[in-house]
Each structure stands twice: as C-alpha cells, then as structure tokens.
Image 1 (tube, rainbow, N blue to C red):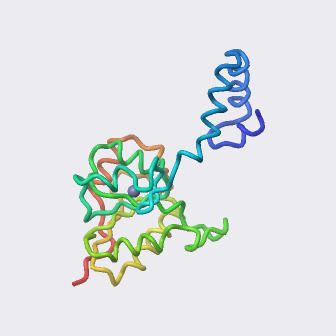
Image 2 (tube, rainbow, N blue to C red):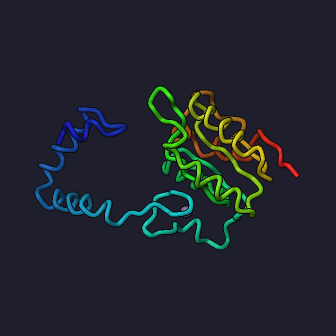
Image 3 (tube, rainbow, N blue to C red):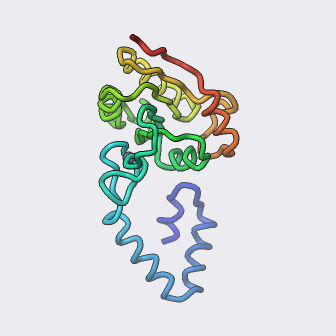
Length: 194
Ligand SMILES: [Zn+2]
C-alpha cells in the first residue's frame, strides 16, 4: 500500500507511510470506509459529455446552469485547474477540459486531447470568446498557439491568461488573486474574424 500511495502525485514514501500507519492506528472502520469509497469512485463519476469535466451525471452542473455565460469557453488542461479558476468567483462562462497539454516527448499529440469536441463547441455558433488557460509552461504555450491556429477561421476571439502568471508556473500553485487578475487582464491572441 505504501508503494501504491507513493506513486501518486504529491505523495512521497514518507507521507505514504504516515497514511498507512494512520489507517492502522484508526482501526478497521476507517479503512473499510476508505475501501468503500474507492470501490464506487469510478461507478459514481462521469465525464461531462459537453465540457469533459468530472461530474456525477452526464452533464455537469456548470454546463447545465442557465445563469452561466454560454458565449465564453475557458480551456483548461485538467479538472483541478478548472476548480481553481472556478474558486476565484470571477469567471461566469463555461469550461472545456482538454485532458492535458501537447507534449511530443511524452507521446501526447493532439489526438490524445479533447480538441475535436472543443472545435465542435466553438463552431456551434454561440461562442464569441475562447480563453486558453493552459499552464504557462512550454507545453501549455504550444497547446495555446496550436488551438489558436485551429480556430483561426472561426468567428471567435481567442485570449490567453494575462499578467501575473509566472513563466513556467503552474495554475494550481498560484494564489486566487493572481489568477483573478490574469483572467481580468487576459491577452488577445487571435481577433474575431467577420
Ligand atoms: Zn460540463
């Protein structure tokens, strides 16, 4: 169990050992509870058919919410980045979860990301702005330019998160105020074509 936990993001051998000993100390009840929730994790979790986010039904609560601005889509690499942007309480549009960023060295090409679905959504008419909120890493930047290029013929403005985001940084490591400012000060990377 220590080995399995140690392979998870953010957990090393030391913290994995602490979790296992904690479970042993707590007695069987806690371990059973954890086992039960792990068993149903995949059964009770869906990916939103529209945005690709994690949901407890076919369509997530954000896509379903009539008060959200359906003319703006914010593209993120993963679910955690979406939660972080959402927790700024500043953004009221929709999201699109790509499932990663382009990284040829790791074998991640466009076919591994949810790009077709994004183009389908953007091309469907209502969308006027796409905010690309991939990480400011080389992979995230390449992905942003690639997407902007793909959307060059669409009638949308494409923007990128602006000031305050350090080069090479990770969205999930930034404070909420920085993210809010970068959303507010987003930079246009493609104009809307008529
Ligand atoms: Zn959704």
